[in-house]
Length: 40
Image (cartoon, rainbow, N blue to C red; front, side):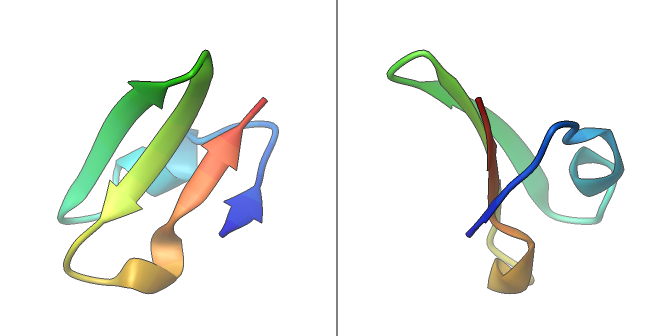
């Protein structure tokens, strides 16, 4: 999982979901798990 300043490019990928957990923003991608990331 990458820690990124901006998730904008990742949330536009096919299959991406933006999830908020524990005050942090995550992008989870079931189609391509390489694109998991968190912000903050």
